Image 1 (cartoon, rainbow, N blue to C red):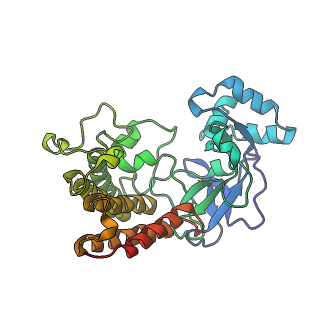
Image 2: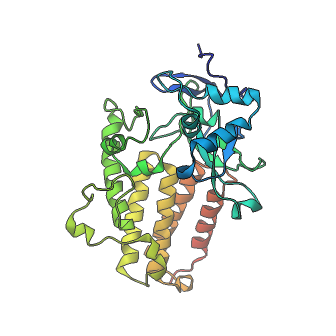
Length: 347
């Protein structure tokens, strides 16, 4: 039975989930029926918004936001302040544990700073390093600070609906993720559970992805500061930097390396079940081919390069369509990418 200290807002009438206790995690969201991939699960408005960057918000900011709430909203705020061990935390900690970054939709996005919003229902969706759902800001036909959660793969009735709290963890092995001490809980998802066979394969893939991140960006992945670099000294000499793409010249080794490492990252992320990351890296591989062929690429491309560009553009589109709603900007972007490849003539 749900503890009465948690006073959450009513769920939408068409909600395909319920909020109940999740072992070792406090509350969690669980599917009450089968949910198809790319289906919206929740749209939510924030209880409170503080228009400051996360690292400068203080207790006084939270107190001001709290005092502006109605009596019912204050009760909901306080009821969200229980930690996993059922102890009550401060209002500051309550806000920080239940917030997501917000970016106002519309004209004000260019003039107002990013802020943090407290979402009573979105914050009940627990973390997984291999999630089955994702959060999107300012979904269509919603107000300025709305957030939404949608399925990125099919979710069976009774399964917990999870999201990824930190995308930098996509490049980290379990040992590094846990040593970072980012959260006050221990993740037990398939990628972290040492009793799950997936864990060992996942760690190998993420170790390789960390090395590829280093080669592509010239620095180690976030969260690995002070650690030994993930590649050999000889390999480190080959590192590049994606930020220097505008300077990459036709036929250069840099473009060839970026193409190869991005392609490999795409396949590894695909195998890991992280379709959005796979799509982004396949897209980068296609762009690298264009760099490899030079700015006159539209005048003609060798068949082998065109075949690779077509393959990776197709995989990029298929991956993003499997985990994004059809109207999402990333889907439109990948459709344009594939269309452009179609229009390139062969030499």
